[in-house]
Image (cartoon, rainbow, N blue to C red; front, side):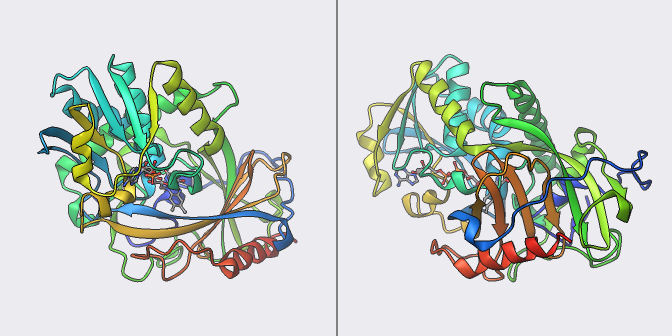
Length: 382
Ligand SMILES: Cc1cc2nc3c(=O)[nH]c(=O)nc-3n(C[C@H](O)[C@H](O)[C@H](O)COP(=O)(O)OP(=O)(O)OC[C@H]3O[C@@H](n4cnc5c(N)ncnc54)[C@H](O)[C@@H]3O)c2cc1C
C-alpha cells in the first residue's frame, strides 16, 4: 500500500486524475472548450461550513450494549461520508443490526450516513424510525462538495491494515454499484461529469500538488485498490483548454447534486413507511426512553459530544455557491491551490480550505477564504 504524501481534499483529485492514466494527449484535436465560469465575489449566494467527522482509526462501526439497548455505532466517515454511505451501511452496519433479530429499529441522525442506513435497513425489510436534531438541508452533510471520493480523509496510514483495506474495498465497490443504479433517477441527483485538473508544475513532479493541513496524518492510497472503477484521465495540450496554467488533464468523475439527492432519500424513506421525529439528545442516557431496542448511531461529528468519543477529530471545510450557470458542466480542480469547483444545479460550488482547518470545530464562516478562492478561480480564465 502506497503512502499519500499529498492531498487535495484528500484523495479526491487522485480519484479524479489517476496518474496511471494515459500519457498521451486526447486523440482529438480540440475537445469542446468548457463554458467560462463567471467567477466574481458578488456572485456568491451562500457559504456553508461543516466539519468532517474524522477518526485516525477509520469510521466506528461496532455495536455495544447501553441502557438495556443495542447501539450500533455508525459514524466517523471523514471526507467520505456520501461516497461510502451505501457500502458502509450494507456491509458494515446492516449485519450488526440484523444480528439483534429486531424488526423495528431506530436510526439516530439524518445526514448522509443516517439516511442511507435507514434506506438499507428498509430494503432489508425492517421498520425504521429516524430521530434527528436537524433534517436536510440543515445537516452538515449538505455542505459537502459532492464528488465520489470514498477514501477522502477516512483513516490514517497506520490504520490501513490488510483487513481494513479488504473491508474498505468491499464497501467502496458496493457503494459504486449502488450509485450506478441511481443514475437516471428523477431529477438526476447522481451524474458523471467531465472536468479539468490544472497544475503549475508537471503532474508527476515530486512534491507537487496539494499538501495536507498542518497536523494532518499521512493517508493510505486506497484508491489503488479500485483503480478499475475509475475512467483514465488524459493530458491536454495548451490548445486543448482555455486555462492560464502550464499543465492540464481531462478527467471524468461521479458527482452528487446533494440537495435533490437528499430530498429523494427523505421521500423514499417516508414512502416506504419510515417515520421522522425531530429530537435533540443532550445525553446518551436519553436513548433509554426510546421504544426501539436497536438503535443505530449515525450522528456524525455529533457523536463526540453525545457518546463522548475523544477520537473524533473535526476537519473543518468551507463551501460556497456562486449563482448557478447551467451552461457550466465541467468540474475544475486547481492542484497546489486547494481549489475545487463542482457545477451543481444549486450553484457553482467552490470549496476553500484554510491551513488551520485540521482539528478545528469552528463553524464560523470566513468570508475572506471564499473570496480568495473565487479570485483564484477568476485568474484561471484568460
Ligand atoms: C468541505 C467538505 C467537503 C466534503 N466533500 C465530500 C465529498 O465530495 N464527497 C463525500 O463523500 N464526502 C464529502 N465530505 C464529507 C461528508 O460531508 C461527511 O462524511 C458526511 O457529511 C458525514 O455525514 P454524517 O451523516 O455522518 O453526519 P451529519 O451530516 O453531520 O449528520 C448527523 C446527523 O445526526 C444528527 N445529530 C447529531 N447529534 C445529535 C444529537 N445529539 N441528537 C439528535 N441528533 C443528532 C444531526 O442533526 C444530523 O441529522 C465533505 C465534507 C466537508 C466538510
